[in-house]
Structures are given as C-alpha cells and as structure tokens.
Image (cartoon, one colour):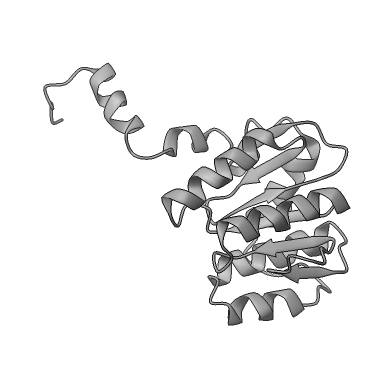
Length: 172
C-alpha cells in the first residue's frame, strides 16, 4: 500500500477541488432524492440509454441535427415522452411551447427573455450546455437562485419545471 504522506483530511480536500463531483455523487441513480417526481425522472429518463417504448423521435432527430450528443438527445426525448408533452420549441423567443429548449446559439439576453416567457406560460425549459462560458454559467446560476419551482442540473442541460412543485434544485 502506497503512503502519500498526507492525512485523510488533506486527501479529501484535494477531492473537493475536482469540480463538483462530490456534491453531485449524492444524487447518483436517485439516491438521496426525496421528491417522487424527480426520483422517477432519474430512474426512467437519466438512467436510460434507449427510447421509451412507442415514443416518437421527432425531437431527437431535431436535436441530433443541432449536434447535441446522442445521450443528451435521447434523455430530452424521453423527458418529453414521460411528461406527456406534445409540443416543443427550440430557440423560439416569442412563442413558448410545453417544452422549450434553449441552445447556446441564443445570446444571454434572448435566453433570459425566452426563459421568462416560458415561465409565464407554465412551460418546462431546458437550457443546453449551461457551463459552456463563464457568462452562461453565471446566468444559469442566477436563474436557479430566482426560480420558484424545481430545477434539475444534469451537466449537459438544466431543466426548469414551472408547475406546482416546490422550490428544489438537484445536481445529478
């Protein structure tokens, strides 16, 4: 066994500097999630690599053309299927749908405007690639802090639900 010359406190401190791994591992595979809604999303959507049976793949095909990774496109398609959404929009600022997807192609101001319109209409919002730039990261942190319902950060996107759910934020 190799001894590093550091005590356990020093080793753990080094681990916490590896981004936000330790804060995310708490909700891995749904462990520690006390919301039945979020737990079912983790088990049925985020842990699944294939489409849900009888699901249409229209959203998936659109997301693949936008060069979103296949894993994330499948997850977003499954979110739409599990929640029973029939309409979606991608980067549409003026006319929000039930499921609104905001890509990094939108400016910070347009993303803010689209998110506010979606919140007013009661739609769910997915902000893709929230950590692609420092400005986008700060914008997403402000949205999470100000959001009045449940939000889920899944590294590749953040989901904002605008319904009767309590204010909670999960980092998966």
